[in-house]
Length: 210
Image 1 (cartoon, rainbow, N blue to C red):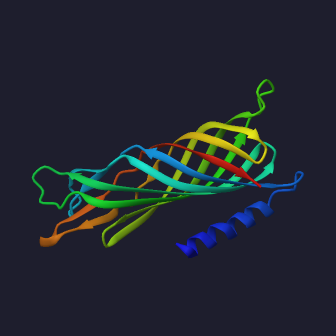
Image 2 (image 1 turned 90 degrees about the horizontal axis):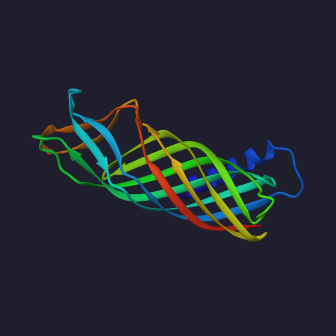
Image 3 (image 1 turned 30 degrees about the horizontal axis):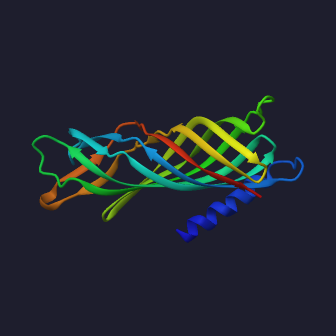
């Protein structure tokens, strides 16, 4: 985890250096608390035959976003999110251990464009686009896949250095090629396949701007 954090900070500095200065840059730090929808992924056996679905349960999430405001209404940031959940396999007639404890971690680069309302300047609607990696971790096994997101929300800044943020995103994960995710006694194996695995998230948190 420490190495990943160092890598994210280093990447952030590189990306910020690519943008021309526009006044004095500010750094926004946002602890995030959210709720994620369930994910369903096709499940197959070791022969490639579809046996059912793997369902990752919905649940709460935590995270943090650190970004640089390189323009007054534009922020580029890195966001880390974690959800502790479980995976259930719906495979009628298959002897599969279920459920599995599951940890989902997401590492995304975000671009946010805010809009200033002249009649209410402390309120800033925004749109957000993101891309990065989602890591699924099961007991004794893990897999990372490309993911992206689009969404929007609102920021409230009663004072310049502190505000509040609420947002909603569609966060699909590209699960091809297959993810050999589960193994059990007796030689059984479950392979996760398909294309996009859909997930949505609503999150909120305070914004500290330095």
